[in-house]
Length: 506
Ligand code: FRU
Image 1 (spheres, helix red, strand yellow):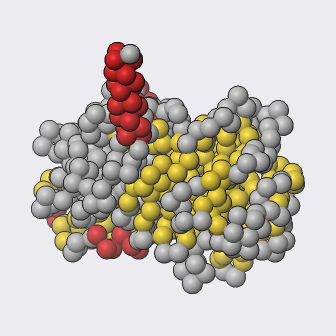
Image 2 (spheres, rainbow, N blue to C red):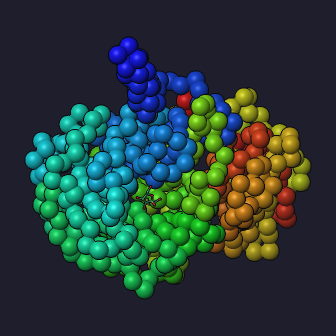
Image 3 (tube, rainbow, N blue to C red):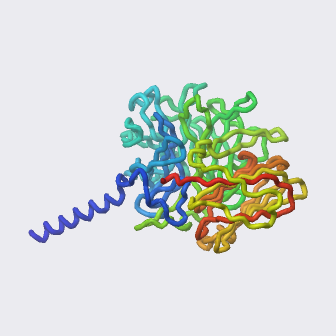
């Protein structure tokens, strides 16, 4: 008997220990532990364990919500839950408890959150409703709701709300209220197309149409769609985002289409598809925030800063006992830009809120410094922005080399046609063959003049050309931050400055 009580006691202690591991209530708001090697200082990462896609991006009562694919029990993909973080400024994030855990229908794969202003679903006015993929034997769509600003969710008893019709890859619902036709619209990735559904109550869904056969990149199944309007020159266009294998520099990336949505069908305008939101290797599965106040009006995007080619083997931020693997891009504002040939391109630039952590600009070079190596005065800060404005005429090339004391380096080379990012000597690269590959991008516009904005963190370099006409996002794992800049090339650039950023975890 005594022995039995002993065993029960030990079991209870073990069980409480295991559940304590999974529970993230203990994560402090201001965390002194976000200092590990490689740990992003201006990007969101989970305190510990694995993350992938951003999910459920929604603004509600003063908070930007960032849910995300999360394994709370390990630093590899699997056991998918929805992690949760909130921000009041898109820069500083506070990680909260896990929002959705696996159940009898399966793991919790990617999806979205909407605010049900008129109580269409019957969960209450302004209930936050999560629509996500239940990934069990088959993939189906489920919903859950929160009436306490996303702190706790209740799963709907009638799940799944959209059963699997016999399609293996049937996931990643993105729902929005389409005011013109007064109905909820769901986009769903269905093998290599996007299917559209409609609903009056978020619970019963009717299929409308399908888009994607014979257009764009089909290097793998389509994932994580998003659809939203953007206005330009008095015209409203609809932008469709789709993430898949087949990215221009290998592995996974996010492509886009620009066209029209009439409440039933999406049709793409002519453009040289595939077009990519980002030409770097590490911006995937990004979607945009729903319910941004009208007086703000921006379309805000965040992506997972990784690539399925090597996602499970990138170095971890080495927090004990398990490590944290994966991070998000900076939050970006999306806009349209007309190409001289008449079609539209999607631009993305870092949100203005970044100013809140930026220190003063420091001029660093003038025309005489070509081929000299300059020390960047970082004052112990671990992230910074370089900005270069100048001219690159037809025969000219500009190379910026970022390096550290161990001579680990990456290079950014731009001429009037293309931009190339090289990371073959950038630090740790041997965890996957494809990691060392270059990223190359067309410049899509004028380089005379040209402006480059480069955001460098402990494990990433994000490059923006001409206010985001092109962006290239890439991971790097140098043993210490790059703190030296060398400028090479025959060109007539004029002005380069840099500024440091305070850590968002301070
Ligand atoms: C994209 C993705 C989604 C899926 C999720 C699973 O990266 O494969 O299609 O819902 O990740 O974690």
